[in-house]
Length: 197
Image: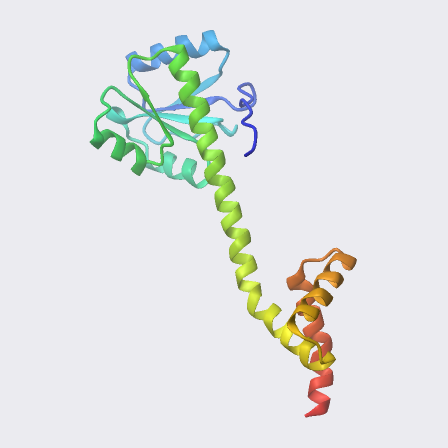
């Protein structure tokens, strides 16, 4: 597991979305004490040019679906602020893409813990998506690798294990993925097969 690093709050402020006046006042007071910069948006205002470390949205006053959609697409952590911790609020927070809930009353300790939890969970989600993409890519390459193994077995009169050793050895020698070596090998084999037919 990767070590969780604290965000750079100078370069990446916390984005406060649709916070009611009292909540905003409490957040700003606590964030200032903690040395965390923030920017406040309401009703789908244009976001600042800096990428925020996270977004905190007040569920009871939420009015920025476009902002939250962009935030979720960018993989930025979302924290839901609420005065009610019932199942319906948890469900609503999840629907908005939240990875953590900050319950009122707002305290410094709760802000920091919730912020780090949201950042950590979003990091895990993003890492999981990257792993899934890599696995999909490998899975998509399997038919081509299988064809290369079969062609190599037929051309060289060797068994499957020996064919795998040849592909892996060439992969390591050329510092290329096995799928790329298989594709190159199939391309080299194609003219010879056509000539034999």
